[in-house]
Image (cartoon, rainbow, N blue to C red; front, side, top):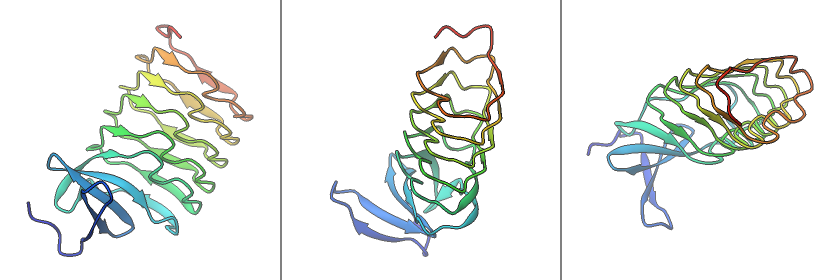
Length: 174
């Protein structure tokens, strides 16, 4: 494969080459980019690229943006099919998130302690919300759950003290 000239690499402990492009650290698996982390000093609006190192970004690993305290909004590209648990935990200035429409699961603790989060756009393919997914998102005031959702795990919206409008679909089973 051909890699972008701006990408640098080092050998990871797992034996896989780790690459850096802008604020992102990623690996390559099965000809696809997997985002491992973002520089915690990143500030403001973040638009995650759909391509890293010339390859499609399909997955964001667990805790990839954890403690990126100064990100205010983040847009995840449509190419991303899964986002690992706790990926945005402790992003304290995060107010808005745009998720890809094909995402099917909101993993546990995905937005844990995003205390200023007010707006999350959930895609229509979301079928489950994990344990403590929006835990302590104190400013989250409204969220629309897609009709196809069938599971909301325990404490998913715990301490979301301003959440006063939550539409639960008829199909929800647990």
